[in-house]
Image 1 (cartoon, rainbow, N blue to C red):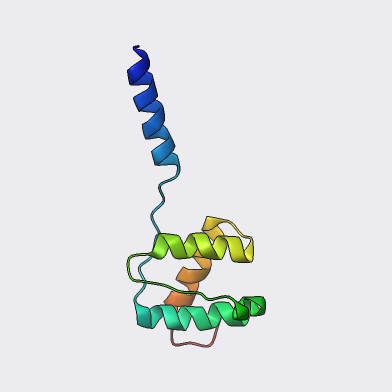
Image 2: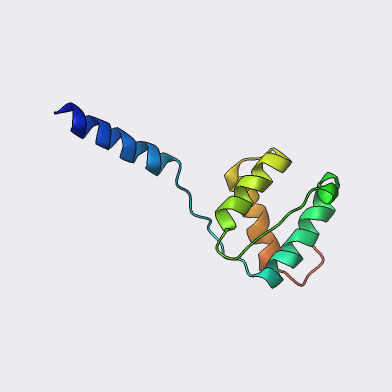
Length: 91
């Protein structure tokens, strides 16, 4: 295998390893409801600017992973749980 093919394959592998797609979709309205639930669950996040723009779900997950010190699966599960009953009072 030529070295250039190996380097290209390695580059593709690195890209694939770091490419994630959020398993949910948020709108600004649903994000406000999810955000309230997150802030109730993690009170120390009240001082942090939790911003969101449509289509930036992956960046939001990455930000929340760092803030709550949990893995991607947990953060996505928590968001999906909040979305399941966005108007409800349950976390």
